[in-house]
Length: 210
Image (cartoon, rainbow, N blue to C red):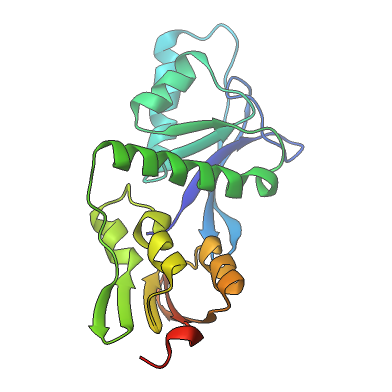
């Protein structure tokens, strides 16, 4: 699963209001950076009827595809509610995309975590392949449970450190795992193992006698 966020952008390269004309750009997270993958012009005129606005939003939602996170400088009214009805999380984020996309993704993951906890859903975790050696596919778990975050799956386990070796399959290396590895002095190795797939191996030197 890859992460995509759409944002409505003005001519100055900054986010604009949903009620203003601009370009809707869908950004996809690739490793640690965001790249634009598709865009479309979006124009709203003052005094347009609700029917016209709904048609424009239907076209926009179709363009978004599987992307269900949307950012604008400000969002309200009928246009905002059409996005929400379509299952989009809508964020108000002034500035340039490189200034807010990562923060939006982090906030979205937190909200999903809260929703999952409210449903009391059990979250799968790593399993032991051999003494001290664990494996988990974040990619597979999120494919089956789209609302599950990498932190829900792994944060407690990684923080606890009760492993000698942990192999992780994911679509990108979550930044928090890199920071946790550095903080706890785990060694970390990463390699691309397929299309939109990365293999991460954490080694805990304190447990290597297992």
